[in-house]
Image (cartoon, rainbow, N blue to C red):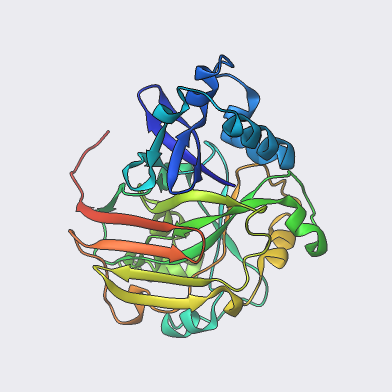
Length: 309
């Protein structure tokens, strides 16, 4: 099963993706007289419920109703929003592909190492990336993202997949001049990289287009992982080249930290991002990110409009 979030006249609501169409689950439930407040009409609840939640949704959508067709739309026309649980943690791993470390002149870590992106950075498919005026080095990084289902803390690697609800695509937009403190190099010596601003500005975390649950994809190996800028293939890798794989990442980041349904773990990017040759993003360009079997995440870069609110 694939779960999506759909923009509707009644707000952003849970949807499913099947047979080339997106279905407004709450709309179908309402048409069947089930109301729109059932627990399993909430993304976090469905992710946390695992097989039980999937079965409920499958049963709902398998029941014929004369009105259900009007709550279905072709994927290409679907008003998709980011499949993100408000308030969920977005935990991003640093260099996790050796070739990307080489192009960025950064040695991979000896053990997993994470930074946080704020929820305010999340945007969905077809939403706009922002070329913030505070940076001239806006970069792209296609990544496989893990979405947590079953909550847990101190999770051993051998049980990590029990806590995974599914997978999606994430573009770890980075503002390299901010990240590496280009304006004040001494800050890097004293405090390290500026992960917060270099990785966390508004619209720096495109996510989607949907979550492919583990009933369709039990483990994300091997999957191709690619990114194009204006149709030019820039990144072309495979998840099997990860230095630290999903179980090890979950084991490490869950040490003393409870992972909750909807939390996102980004697993690093292969070689080919703009940092390799200075090919940073410009206004008007379009970034297309694809992880095999998980859909395509498409976003266009627009100029900073100077808003203060």
